[in-house]
Length: 204
Image 1 (spheres, rainbow, N blue to C red):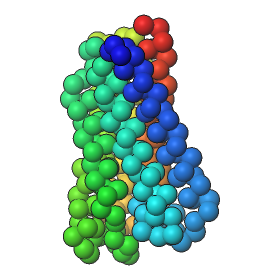
Image 2 (image 1 turned 45 degrees about the vertical axis):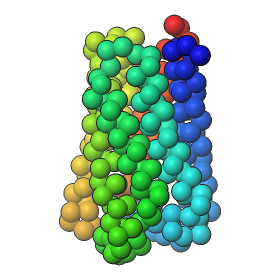
Image 3 (image 1 turned 120 degrees about the vertical axis):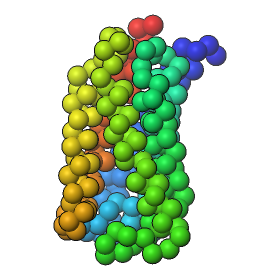
């Protein structure tokens, strides 16, 4: 396989991973009512009755980021190398968070070593992903890939992460819905970016 075909395969695989993660996460929210979506994080599903399904959601979400990072690296010259690297780090961090599930607590704070690793990985994942989306969405030196919707979604993700951080800092009981908004926005960014990349690669 040449570089273009590899990039196409990576982009298609990223799309499949992102679609699966979105559908499976929706199924979990519709079928599992163990946790409060307003105040509790989605990671709690990974230690409940939907643990195996949630683990696949997190892992495929992580895989989509890494696959997209490798696809962009293979195919779009001029994109931020730092942005691509941070996208891969975000994916790797999320994979670690899947392997080490969260502790279910009232204040989101870990109580075990496993929960501590999960929390650290999650704290690394969020800023890496947001910075990556911003860097990769504002590439003026890659005009064939520059796309306003991805930049708007990146800004919205950044703002939602700031709000989520403040909500948790002041211990407001709406962190669950805040996290879901953040994840939803980043899922949309991945989906739009992957489809944009797929369309770009078809023109080459």
